[in-house]
Image (cartoon, rainbow, N blue to C red; front, side, top):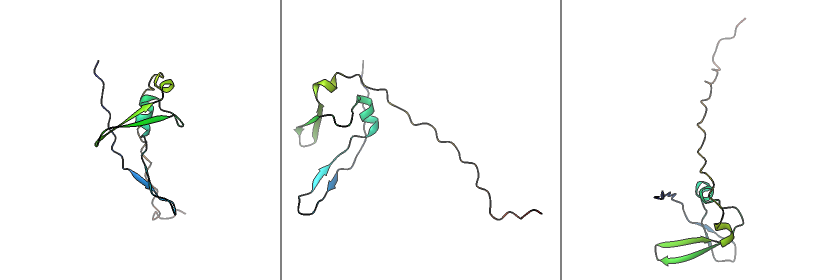
Length: 91
């Protein structure tokens, strides 16, 4: 069985506090977290494989969970046309 590659580009953000060095922050997009069943508060470990590749590994207890199905966004409903304010008054 061939696995499907899912990619989501993200931007590394900086958290700057007075008197402290900036900290870099990355997030896991919700579709990726849902695909592997990642939950808030889980412990992960980063491994530097080379200058262009970081690997994130979950704790063993969490890795045993089956991946959750990827949720698809529901189609947006079309809004009814706005009523014109320039309609003549009846009466």
